[in-house]
Length: 524
Image (cartoon, rainbow, N blue to C red; front, side, top):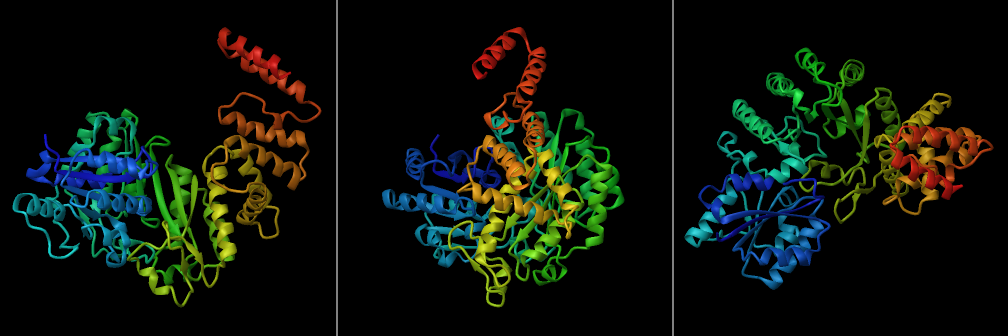
């Protein structure tokens, strides 16, 4: 079968599948038999990608461009147009849907489709391949597609996708809110797919073996009726061992939704809840609406009465927010006990209305993806650098779940501070880590444990035996059974190692006991 059309993107990792490409393929109609989805990762060499693409001899390449693959996509497009200028390249995706005229990759590519391309890409390919007609303009745009007429993409997840990759789904598009840092603020309204048809697709995926679903709806709980329909559908099938991820409106959790989520087993639901800022003045500045009292009540309910895994988002670098203000918001959120707090650094998304604050709040962003904020009127470059490290170390130590005892110690210490701030307590820890590590990416888990041990003994002046025993609890919880050199300290260490080794050996088969005994001899 001849492949005239390649639908292509570079995912951030293999675990991610491209939802957008499957929508495009589903809506190619009569051209499907001449099209193929081809996915790579950003780790793949651009030259290898180009070689792979051209070996299929396509006439049209549709490339999805996102903030995480913008640089790599630019290199791929540049190479393609140099070695195969006759191949038509059509770009799409959020990174090229706004400010396209001045975007280098759009200038090099042949055409760019702005916005939702479900129907526009089919029309382009039909006109070119069947009629020999190309658009007069490089930038292609059109009306939003009728959401009820969009063909379903779910049949085009492969068996490999279902077995090994994230399965993305959606029951709606759009967002009613106007948060200026988000591209969804440009949406005019929320448009919903037909729920019975959607649930039929979900049943089809379940029948094929899918057990994990990530909903990309911006406001899944906006409609309690739709929300409860979908939750009930999955609850009725929860014995299959399901995991469901939803993005929730923080202050919208009515009784009918609460009653349902209480019935799910622990860990089956994950709610991503965007707080972004706890400073009411900053929230107003960026058009973020939150009823903070309702938000608090909802978090307390989720922590006390459900098994929902909560993932709360905060943004560093919003206009008007300084470090002290962010720290207060972090402390308020932390007290509500979400399972994870995602500390994100503000990014300038092309087309996002937050650009209107650039002059007044002296917002300076990096020119390269992911276009992070570099400094503002209220946070200088040095502060934002520290917060970049804070965000990374918070993820490594607190969000990872590998250091529950260490994190608990820092939280307990914060209650004895004059300001009782967990943020500033953890900030001090990250300053120690920053001095200890020349870079904060690629640090091994073993090094993280060793650094935690060093902080307890050097910065906090803990007795080595107490520090060792605490870190050993986290170390064992991570699944490790050895005694690394940095934990072989203290007057009682030999006794501890021997007792621990005997306990481990007694729970193992004899073959493994013999190997453990050999290792013990080598380490003594």
